[in-house]
Figure 1 (tube, rainbow, N blue to C red):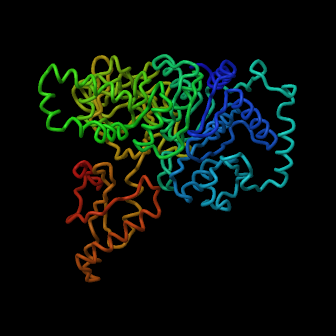
Figure 2 (figure 1 turned 30 degrees about the vertical axis):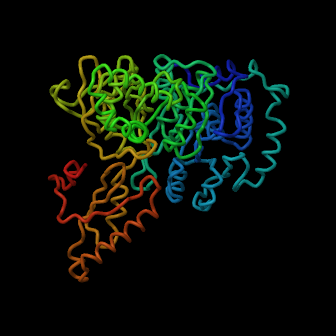
Figure 3 (figure 1 turned 90 degrees about the vertical axis):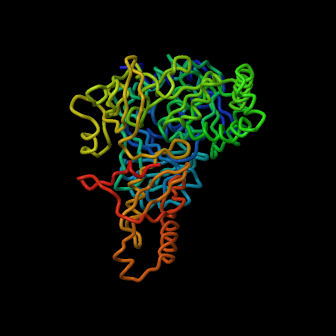
Length: 549
């Protein structure tokens, strides 16, 4: 059992009382003392509304100061936070709020506008994430409760909150802290149940291996509703007294480079896509110019050029980082080799929502190329093969980081967690004798979308397969885009005397209709008609690996 999670938050707020805590990019800044004041207010409001320890509270919105404050308020109260990705469609949001049994909901105004509160009948109230005002309420006396709370929330502090007086109620690390839905769609929803200790184990590991100091800066651009961004760009830096700036907009390379230049973050978390785009747009074109290609063939000049490129690329990321930690998917081999050639400070980690999220990590100084680092010290790993050093098998892990199961989904929980506590990751790999993990592929079909968002092809295929003239389909990724391979319903095509040109037009219409019902990051770029039925296993599952690019 690791250090108590709630006490870590209490201690860092008290210790760093007068330091800046959270900023919205190009917006307001809150000190740790301001954060404390808002947490105390929300705790008092929860009590006055009859919210109990263990109750579920949902939150949805882009990365922002209020998102962070609501999250910390719920966790330190002893309630359970349900973070929802803002890209989900209204029907999916309704489903998650209802399935999680949420009794309160904080939503960004722009998202709330598209929701139907009558589809979430068990919510007493929905609050604005913009200014914490009431957006909707079924509670008759809510305004009176809020007025009472505003007048009395500092009573026990004699009207003035100080660092010395701040104290949160004790919440045991064995209690549930969060339910994170890996998908929004009804038939595929799995709410990962994380305990306080799961988060604490990740945070303590980070404190010991990625040291940050009070006042150091962080840019939060990965979705905080996703556990990777939440833990390593938000929760862990908070416990170190860092100043976190929430980007609050789509993290395009242009936007990120500008923010890094202004904020000079001390630690950067990223997904491969961001690094690869910057390499391809900022670096590769210069290196492929005729004169540069010639100079790179001369050993002495190559060393000089690589040193300059390293310095330039370091400046692109703000010039102040200890290392860049890349996670979520495999890094492009060409990009990784280049980063190693120039001596760039990067490392690759491996994790999943079910491990809150960390499974393996090693600092850039000790990192081995093509690996995902060493298994972290709170975990065990084994490869389900006869020779784990040479023969690829499924990666199994267990330890303090591992979830306790999926919310209201006992069958899926039993499938993922065996009786000995091993989590079946669905990933294939090998380990070496120093416990470095080398991922060789995924037996899952999950695709990593922009900013680290998980895309589950089955969700898209389930919708597409029900559309006109579609017999079966596979969703694949090409050059960062989602492509649908469709084997048409040839019997329907023949019966309706549909020409080849008409079929193409029908599939174009199918794609447009499909995208209307999907989050933006799951949109299909095009549909390619496949000429024959997809090859299948004896269990009649499509052999996806045959069609992957």
